[in-house]
Structure formats: C-alpha cells, structure tokens
Image 1 (cartoon, rainbow, N blue to C red):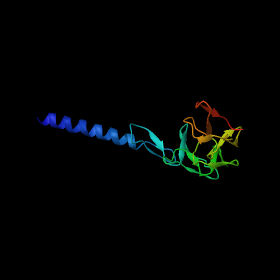
Image 2: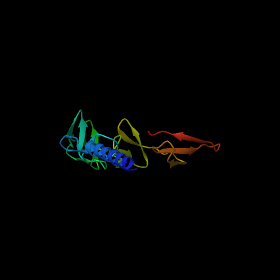
Image 3: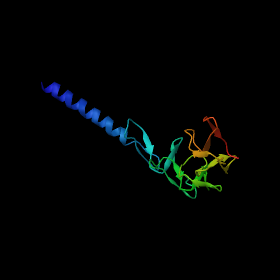
Amino acid sequence: MRLQLTTWLLTGFTLIGGALAQTTAVLPANAVASRYGDGWQCMRGHERIDKVCNPIQVPEHGFLNFSGEGWQCERNYVRRGQACLPIRVPAGGYADGTTFGDGWRCSRGFQERDGACAKVAVPVNGYLVSPPTGGDGSVCADFDGRTRNVLPS
C-alpha cells in the first residue's frame, strides 16, 4: 500500500513539475506564456514575426483595434496600405463611417458615378425611389400605367 502511495505521489509531482517547466521557458520580450497549450503569444500592441514580438506600427490617425493585434483608422479616414488617408467626400455625398471601401456614399437624390455623386433627374410624373441594390434612382409611370427605371442624367 505504501509503495502504491509513494508511486502515485511521485507521478503526481512529476506531472506538476512538467507543467511548471512549460511555463518557465524563456520568453521573448513583450510576450506572455500562451493560455492555450504550450508556447507563447505576443502582448497587446505587438505582432509575432518569427520568434520575436515587434510593436505594431500604428500610423497617424490610426489606433489599435479591439483585440490589440492590428489597427484601424479613425472616423473620416480610410486605410490605404499602411496609412490612414482623409476621406474625400464628393459634392452630393456624405461620410458613411465604414472602415472599408471609399468611406462615403451619395446622398438621397444622387447616384455614384465614376467616384462622384451625380444628381438623379426625376422626370415629370416620376418619383424618387431607393432600389434594393443601393443608390438612388427614379421611377416613372408611362401613359399606359407601366413603370420604368430612369438612370441619372
């Protein structure tokens, strides 16, 4: 009985010692022991490149994202490569607050055309609608009661 107890205790201490040895490995600067499995991960604001944790380079008008593993641009700026550039909103448009695309949309009554907002020409007996595909258009009722779509002028 004593031999079994001694064997059990030695096995338990060996397993615990192995787990402690895993967390006492030498870590690179700005790293912490991984919470999942063995190894390590970089601290918030750092990215792993090979076996080193390098600081994430955040450009002017940028900030670390919620996870701290990347960055995004402030409102009214759009990411282009490794920079945050101001959104250039054309006449008839507005900044839409998205972090992707051009960062702007055309106002009601305008439609995007070649990077600008073209005014939608609503004909007599027509009315402005917002089609499901986005943008604005107009619809006319012909003399026979049929409807047709009209593109911007």
